[in-house]
Image 1 (cartoon, protein in one colour):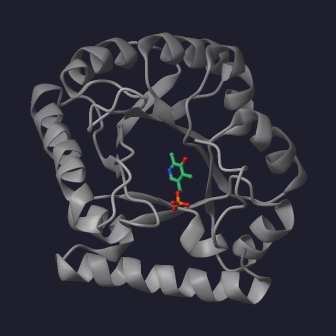
Image 2 (cartoon, helix red, strand yellow; image 1 turned 135 degrees about the vertical axis):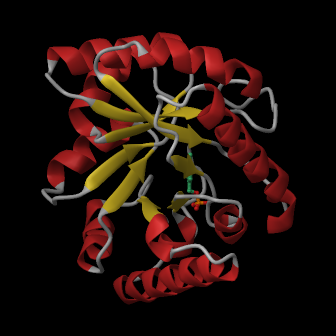
Length: 237
Ligand SMILES: *Cc1c(COP(=O)(O)O)cnc(C)c1O
């Protein structure tokens, strides 16, 4: 785990690496937003990250986020990045500003229903299982267009793009095909469903975010490079 000083230094380093990766492929660094993943990290450390300029945070479990987001009274954007159960949709709508992990039309309907009741419009991403690993959540790539057509009709959600979690690999390069697949899918959807906003590609984590940026990521979700290794046994996907 990183100390407060480390957190500041790590943020500076990650920010630099993001800029370098963007520069390498001649992308504007402003197109890439760092979402700092705070799962298992206590509020004091999240506060330190905030004080070092972080404004986008990600949590993967509603239950953990409830206490944390409530305690931290900071004007930040909270992203839900983990699998959402329909019975948690109401809390998710209350807590999160963006839901990146919409992985079924069923959960989209539940989120829209609660958002409507709360007079909110929730920006969402459709999560895609680009690797086909059976334990992974997300739409199969070939399902996304039809799902998007249905989700786009829901009154209180606004699709803003796609999200994926690449497989665990030993070399960052090995993740590239999955990021490329998400970008190519997005490019096809832009053509086939031009009335939907396909702006965002959320992809890339601590071990592979530079490759993801080279392939077009607009949101990178980074935990360990900022806070250090999570405590064993508390890591929950
Ligand atoms: C934990 C998590 C991350 C961040 O992973 P790190 O390897 O710590 O950068 C990103 N995305 C999702 C969906 C996660 O659950």
